[in-house]
Image 1: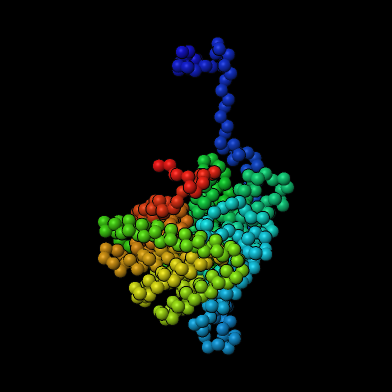
Image 2 (image 1 turned 60 degrees about the vertical axis):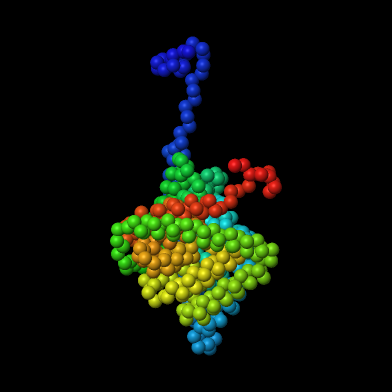
Length: 462
């Protein structure tokens, strides 16, 4: 055994007598960041963030303007005395027709399938963006139980990537991906209450790790910060607000107690079971909808409308409380929870959950906000039981249901914590326990993907 110049056994230096060539230096993992071209990527991300945010703000403004126009102003214009109980039925049928036609006849399949969760497959082509915008606008504005985050991610990424290609011909695929990700960051920068939540969301969804994470994340954070400023400025200038997921006047939360940690285990398991059921039922319906896209989407719209009509007839509450993403209704539910009986809350949970399944299977939008609403509603119901107060129950329900639907534990903890502001930090230990339990149980309930080439009849390994 030889000893090299360093004195360590088995090592050979440049002048080793056996003539072994010196080991090659390892590649610099941060080389792309140190390269001169990386500064151009940051500059491009900063410049593209502004127009992307204008488009994202305009899309959200259109959705929020159409909701009262369709459900309040249109019945009045038709001479009806208020909004009839049956009004959601034709609205959702039209939504199904428009969405189905956009998915079938426009490029891009209307965007990502929400029943499959939230995933990034690279920025969509520019030709696919009109179909994404039309399908999601028809879904969200008419009352489908979905959120705006998925179409915003697609629109922001697609526009940014297209702009990056146009401004610099011959741009490599890695740069286009970084610029496209920055556009997605900018588009949802203020939607989830903080640019940091959007950054964690896209980081976990993309699955990028190591040095590549920094290369992709830094331009996105820059675009996200600029986007948050743009959203805030446009919201103040137009008087429309920022469309941000925030709660105000949150009741003070006491320090976590031992019974509440026990409830965190219960809420985590319950959310995992409920989220797995919603996902499986939505995927089951999705397979049937895809065979007859337009008529099946209209049928799913009628199902959502019928659920809203039934909820309104049974509880006396407006049908809109069951429809839409739940982003605006989440704060109302939290602050006015005393105005709901337990029976009304249970009906809301059941109806919203079924409408969520139908919307996931056929319409276009994102899965986040309805999941937060369902988790918050479940927490409000459980807060009537001994040993659990409203604020921690609400926060744990939001976080656990988010992780059950998204399988993104860091993002779920951040959303539930930042949603409640200062009191979110107080209940964060409870949220973490509920999210971790929900995450593990959800993965245990989810069957592992089949190995390539393995037949269904092949025995599985222990």
